[in-house]
Image (cartoon, rainbow, N blue to C red):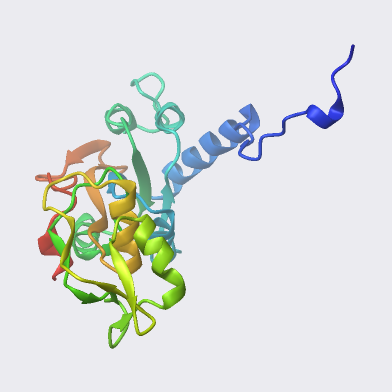
Length: 244
């Protein structure tokens, strides 16, 4: 007996797989840019957010070309051996493409690139699994949204959500209120999904999106220079950067 069409399960989360044509197109584009620009940088990203990476792309539009794709595809496009490399010396950079990294082609001098990315930091909300960069305690009284200017209490219709996330609130004159202080998180402890959601609701940004430069290839010499002290800091949730 054939299965009924009514009982057919349709996944709403399916994502189309990348085709061979897409990979070939990406590789060709990488190779074209390797011929166009003088420098090729390898970078990693801390607390990845597509919106912030898009900001970087926009700010460098016209002066650089940024790729953040599958590492194996990028490495193959550049060539991982002297025999396969697209341009002289590129295999030295291609062999360092491991993990979640990206490539930026540009003609901008290395010192200017280093200084720009050292200054580029975008505070953002932590996600479940991040470590808290500081302790956050809500004081007794109305639960406040700290991001508003001036801070304002949560509306009455959001109290059920606050209680669902672990706050023991009650209504006082139509305002969600705490009878006692509530510690949302402790510094250095891994955040749960409920803690991360609470921090986002009150407006506490606890992580920083940043780009860590690793090395760059120079087409003029065919050499790859490692960036001294390059990459991301050991603690990507470094609270000092949030107060700068």
